[in-house]
Each structure stands twice: as structure tokens, then as C-alpha cells.
Figure 1: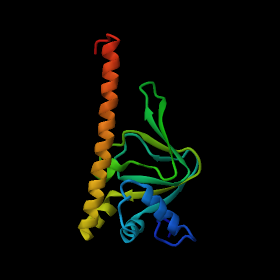
Figure 2: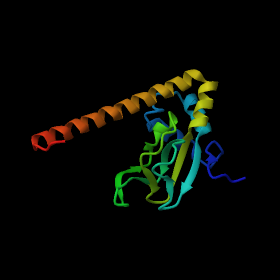
Figure 3: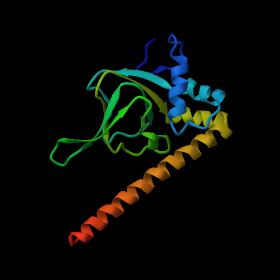
Figure 4: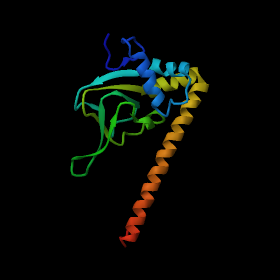
Length: 174
């Protein structure tokens, strides 16, 4: 049976070690021991995307985070005029969509493969099952997620403060 998202734990030649190497680069997994990384490797799902194929649409409920194993993904925000604005280009070893591991809020942007890509998915139900089976490992991951989200919030606040200062300096009333 060939599913839409295949389980990455299935043997695929010599890709086992590169997957662990990529996981080690992701801040969510960076401080995990090799056996703990293998626990996550078992619940990752792998999917190949063609150039232009959508990973998820803005507004869809979030179901998990994604890690780029190979390729490139563009993150786009819908504009009021119906167009799109490219927010970021992400490459091998980068991740996106991690908020969906904590809640099912609608996606804030669209993700699209910019070239043929292999993407690993970590989905909320699999993470919650792992947390239930291995609470200590689950807590490590949740703390790492909290740290990442907190850091992104701090950076966003700094950017908003800089923008507020620029607007004030320009005597623009908001």
C-alpha cells in the first residue's frame, strides 16, 4: 500500500544516517540523544513534492510541522489584491509549521515546493502518542518547542518596536 505520506522508518538505502543528521540540526531535536532521535525518526513521514506543489494552504487547519530533507519550499502570504507575497525560501535542514504541533489554528501562510523536494512531516497525533508513551522525551520536545516559539515571538516584538519607532520618527499617526 502506497500512502500519501509514507513512514520514513521504512528502509530506503543509505538515507538512515542523513535523516538523523538533519534532525540534529533542527533546534527542536538538537539536544536529543541518538536513541531519542531514532524515536522521532520512527514517527516521521516522508513525501516527495513536485515543483509548484502545495504543502499546505493559508487558512487550512494545522496538523504538524515539516522538515525539508531535500529541496526548497517557499512560504507565501495572501495579499488583499489576490496575489501572494513570498515571505521566505527554506532549504534542506530548515523547518516550518511547528505551531501546529501545539494547536490546530489555521495556517498563517501557504507553503509550496519551489523545486522537486522531499519533506518530512511530524504530525500532532504522532507526537501526542509519543508523549503518552515516553513522557520524559515528550517534555524535552515541548520545552524545545516553547523555547523556539518564544524566541520567534521576541524577534517579532523587536521588529514591531523598530517599526513603531520609524513611524513615530516620521510623525506618522497610527
